Every structure is written in C-alpha cells, then in structure tokens.
Image (cartoon, rainbow, N blue to C red):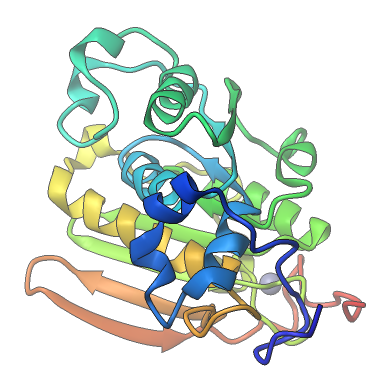
Length: 273
Ligand SMILES: [Zn+2]
C-alpha cells in the first residue's frame, strides 16, 4: 500500500460493507475525512477516562463516528442529578455503574463496535495497563490527581492524550504528545502541585449541561484529529495547543503550551523511535 501523503501510517483496510459505507457516508464524502480517514477511525481504539458530563457526549460522537474499539473507565454509579448533563443515561439507569450503562448504550447504538467497561478508578497503580494499546486516551475526569496519573501513563506508553476539562463556564481542550521529543505533556501545563489534590467538583460548583456538552463534543473532535493524523487533512492534532472556551461570551482563544524542560514526566524523555 502506498504511503499516505500526510505521513507514514496508512490504514490497514479501506474495505467496508455496504451497510457501513451507508452509515458513514457523510464522513466519507467530506474531503477532510474521506474513505481512508473513515477506515482509520473504524480501526482505532479510544480509551475514555470518565463517562460523565464530558465523557458521555464525547462517547456519543466517537461511537457515532464508528470508532471500532472503545474502553470506558468509570467507577461511579449513576445518580438522578447526573441526568441533567450525562446524555446517554436515563432514569432507568439510576444506581447502575456508569461504565456498564455506557457500554450497554454503545451496544444498542452500534453492535459492530467493540466496547469494554472498566468499573474501576484509574490511578497511578493501574493506569499503565488501562491505556496500553490505545490510539488516543480522552480524559474527561474531574480531578487533577487522576489527570496527572493518566497523562504520565500516556507519556510512558507512547499514547496521545486528549484532555477536556470544564470549570464552570470555561472549557479547556488540548491534545498532548508528551511522548514525542520537544512536545509538552499535561504535566508541563499544570505542574506538580496537584498530584494529591482534587479540584472543586461539579457538586460544589454547579455545572450547566449544555456547557459541559460543548466541551465533551469539542474533546471528541480533538480525539478524531489525533486518530486521523497522517491519513486525512482533518488529522492535524495541534499538539500542545490549549483551546480555551468561554461559554458565557461565548469566545474561543488558543494558547501554546511549551514543554517544561524540568518536567518530571517528559522533560528527559528519550527520543521516540
Ligand atoms: Zn511534561
């Protein structure tokens, strides 16, 4: 197979059944995605950290895009107060583990997708095994300790990270390739101070459903850019560019995160092969 003009990774196959071609026709006709891009999406594995306010809408668009393999990590159970923003759950799901209910949603939505529910809290001791082999990890978790553990594991495993976060009406979305030489990781951005601290939670701060939905779908878009790198023109991950969404104005601004040479995670990373 010829190399893609955008890079070195080529899709493993572009053959699709007529049903799949029809299902994803609107992607395939987009010049920025195309058949090769759709094949890449279908051959990809995305790990979602958290299927809550950010993860649930992100999951809807990633599953809708046909991401072939999804791993859903969450140790929470669904509460009635989640339904205001966690769009895949219904009243009948209250009391169920979020990971299980989210996996059931995927199975109903598109049985062709492989989905794994991980009813666990991702942390430093288990993160390496949970992110291994992913094409991208989308982190929509709600605290810095988890985010740093996930980021450190991604850098160690050579896995790209999409970070999507919300504080009241400010969303922050960025793609990180901390495993690549010269690229910032999430720790370069936030530093070491938060390893043991939880940030303020939705329960304390409040959260508007539509706002966190914007951040979740923004995160899905960013993850798709990672998956399409080297295959389609949408595949420009914009590594280390932090997109800050002000939901009140609304406005969007972008800033570049520089690699911290002293970063404990990526500062002395060996050049990637
Ligand atoms: Zn770093």
